[in-house]
Image (cartoon, rainbow, N blue to C red; front, side):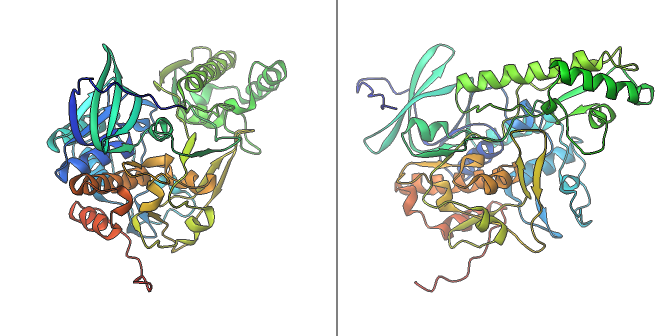
Length: 441
C-alpha cells in the first residue's frame, strides 16, 4: 500500500507522546500504563465503549491469570478485574483449586457494564485522552514523529505522536505504516455469542430434535458449524441447556479490513437466524426467543506482525524464558478448526510458564511502533494461546511501558532495554519473568 503524503501546512490538532489504537484488553492496559508512567497518551477506539471483545463481543470471561497454583499475570488488567469484583460485577474462583483440563474454570465472568465503566475511570485517572468513534486513515513518519490522519464523525483531523501502539487485534496500524505481516490460509473461525429464552429444557423433545436436525442439515437449512460438535451428543444440547453461549463457528471469514469484517458480521447473524428458525420448530421450543446477541462477531485471528522475534509453538509450550521477556502468558494451545465446529485443545505440561519477549511486540525494523495483543509476532499455534484476554492485558501493559520509555527518551523502541521495561512494569504491579544472566554480556 502506497503511503499517503501529507501536506506540510496541515493543522495539527494535538500532540502526544504515545497514541494507542484499540480500546480492548491490550489497548486499555497499554494506554493506562503509558499515562501512569507520565507520558501524554491518547487512546483511539472505533466504538463508543472500552473493553473490546470482552464487552462488544460479550467474551466477558477473561483468563488465565494463574498457572499451576500461582499467579503469573497481574498488573493493571488484574487490578481492573479485582475492582470489578469489589463492586459486585464478578466472582473470583478459588485459584488454589487445580482445574485439571477444564481451564475455563479459572476464567472470570465479569459484568460488561461495570468492567467498561471501571476502564473509563482508570483511563481518566491516568490522564489518558479518550477518543471514541475515531479510526486511523493514514500514518506517516515525518521529522522523527508519527503523523496520523484520524477519520471522525466530522471528517479528517491530524495528530502527531512520538510512539504508536497497534492494539487493533488485526495489525491495522502496522499495515498502514507498511510493515510486514503474516496470516494463515485458513484463519480460525469467529463466533457470535447469544442468549436464548422462552423455553424449558425439560420440555424439549430430544428425539424429535434429532430427527428435525438431520432433515434441516440435509436441506441446507442448518450447517454443522452452527452448533457445537461433540461425538455422541444431541445437536444443540449444550446450547439449549446453557441458554445460548459461544458455540457456533463462523467460517471462511477474515475480519482484518472493513469489507471482510462486514462479511463476518452478516454471516454470523445469518447463522443465528438459522438456529432461531430451526429451534422454534422443535417441540418444547415453539416460544424460543433470542434474548440477547452480542454487538459484534468475536474474531479469533486475522493478521500478525512480522516481529523482530517470532514466538513459535515450540517456544511457547517449552516455557522458554527469553532474554528480553517482559511478561508471562498462560493458556492451552486452542486452535478452532475452520472446517467444522471442533477445537484442537492441547494443555500445557505441568510446570510450564510461557513468556513473551519484547522483540515480538516490535515490527521488524520499527522505531516508533509497537504491537500488543493478538497481533504480536508468532505462529498460529502459539497465537491461539496468547490471544486470550489476560495475556493481551499483559502484552498491552508491556507495550505501554516500552512506548512511554521510548517517548520520554526520544529513542527507537528497538533501543529500549527489556530490563528497564520490566522494572517499570513491576512498579505498576505486574509480574515479570526473570531471565538467566546473558553470558554474552
